[in-house]
Image (cartoon, rainbow, N blue to C red; front, side, top):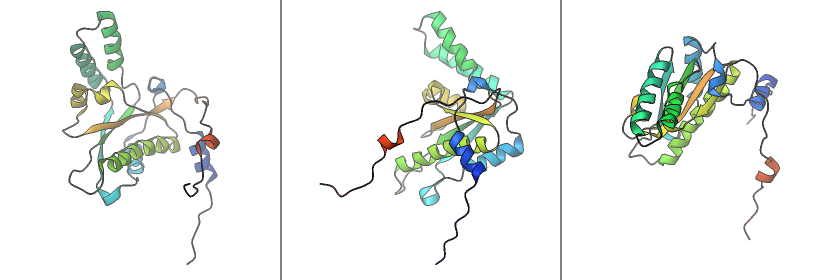
Length: 202
C-alpha cells in the first residue's frame, strides 16, 4: 500500500510553534464575527472522541451578555463571601464583574456520558482537547486567546449562572479577541529532560 504524505505547511507549523496565551484583559476588538465563530467551533469539535459520545458542549458569551453575566457573578461572589473584609470582597467582586473583557468567550462544558465503557477521564480529556483546538484555531484565524478556569468555573452558583446542568463541569473558558501587540515569548520546558525512549523493564 502506498501512503500519501502531505508536504509540511510552513505557515501552519509557524503558527503552532509561536502560539501563546494572551491575558483576557488584553484582548479587545475585533473578535470573530458570526461566520468566524461558527468556523472556530467546527475546528474545536475536531477532537479525539472515543465512541463518538460528544462529551462536551459550548456556551458562548459575547456582546451585552458579557456585562450581564459579570454582574451576576459579582453578586454571587459577594453573597458567597460574607465573612471576607469588605474592601477585599469588593476587589474580587469587581474582578468577577470584568471577567469577560474579550469580544468572545467560549465556555467549554465537560459532560461525560454515563453508562458507557468509556472512562470519564477519557471523555474529560476530549473536552480538554476542544479547549486546545479553540486556542490553535484562534491563532490560525489571526486572533489571540487564553484558556482559563478559576472561581467562575468551579463555584456552584457561578456554574449555575453560566448555564451548567447536573453532572456538567467547566473544562475551560476560552477568551478570544485581538491583542494590541504580539505577546513576547516565555520560558518553555526543557524537552530533553522530559523525554525518554522506552526500554524493557529491569
